[in-house]
Image 1 (spheres, one colour):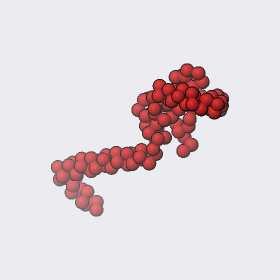
Image 2: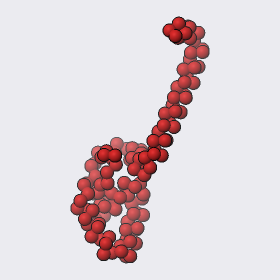
Image 3: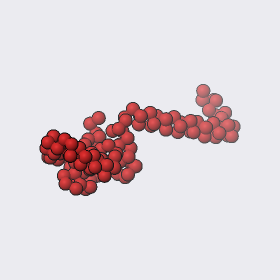
Length: 125
């Protein structure tokens, strides 16, 4: 997945310091408050490793582009793709099957209620 929507960014719009926790929250779909609390909890337990890692991530990660998502639905969709691509693909296939089934029902209804169209379709076969 090389899409810009599947990349981890620093979220400077919702940032408190460098935007790393906000970027992780956006990437995973978890509330930013929980990510920050987890960071603080881990900072107390493994401070020598986590603090330099935070600043390195803050320097290496790109800023989140402001036009990355059109709306909140698109943001939730891409978060689901990043969390479980297979599940998201299954959901999309299911939606398309449902649309195809409903379209077939509409087609069947229209063809059976229109004998002229039905005869023309049979003539084309």
